[in-house]
Length: 187
Image 1 (tube, rainbow, N blue to C red):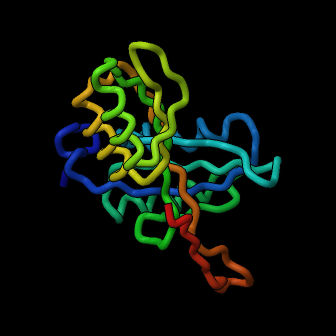
Image 2: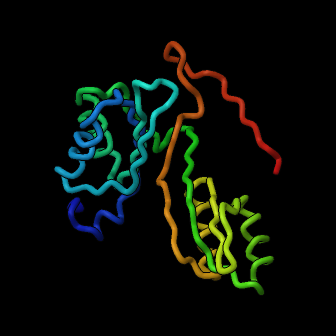
């Protein structure tokens, strides 16, 4: 069994995506994060934001652990005060997205090529200077990683990545799944 505090052993574990709906109160995030740190597990990404109900916040957390520990952590989180609902979305039909802002060197001779390659990923230019572009890209982790790989050839000066946000594709009404309709922009 791999030790949680052994970085190499932990890196070999799969990631789990947890969605936690909590009361919007101080200290909730600290108590949830404390469950993981007390056991020596690192949180790979963490996103917290309000939603349609201002009294609630959704925490999307990606942790590197096996399914057994993931299940144990869900049970422990459910016991905490102010926790409304916990779901392990790892094997669920859900929408996962990340956002990245990245400053890429843009010499005059490569600007047109850089913009064409960025367009393939539907990257949006947020700001431009004579030396660089700042791109915004939204998508799943594979898209973000592929974009970064292409941009690395131009030279990445700086970047920030949000981590995952996730929602099940279908909400539940009276314990049953609702019909899901998918739309594509066709772009």
